[in-house]
Length: 202
Image (cartoon, rainbow, N blue to C red; front, side, top):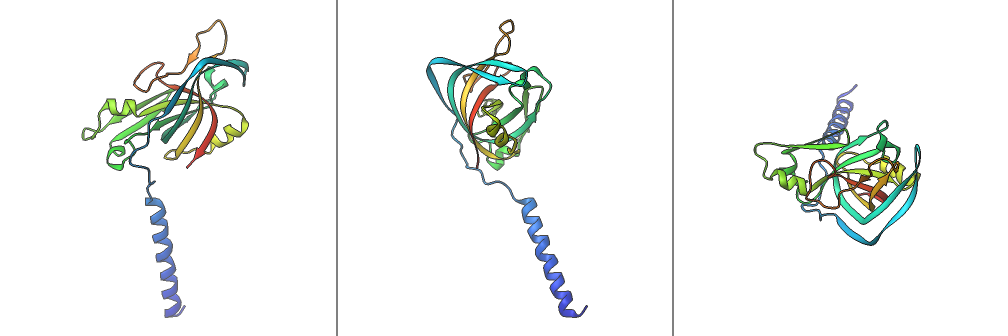
């Protein structure tokens, strides 16, 4: 290999290395402020029959719902009772939580249909700020096409979901699985249960 060939090879290696480093270090460019979810109450609750994996269930549509947010966590479920209608939970964050200086100080995790967040001591936001600008959302896909789109969603994606917050009746003898209807609650029953009719990965 002569000097010119060595130079060309070295140049190619440098370009490939620089490109790979750029891809690995690339950070998503999120809006500084993502509007809070839009919720519209229905004039009267509507009830639909939904075919779950274990047979039909009843969905009571409580409110129209549209959310744009960044995925901070994704958890698939297959064995719990709710998985018959909801195979995926997404931990979603909006507002100013995705600004780099803030996001780097928050750690999100999911387990057992719950999500958790831990703030660093130097976090520029409070626990309440995270509480009202994030949510664990149980997704009920309208059909197979919506499910296929949901399966494409990854952590860190900026997404938009549309649909209805719902209450699910698996068995008339059991308590309903009912969505939260406010962004300010926390703890048990504070998650959103979303019957998803539209998905957009931005």
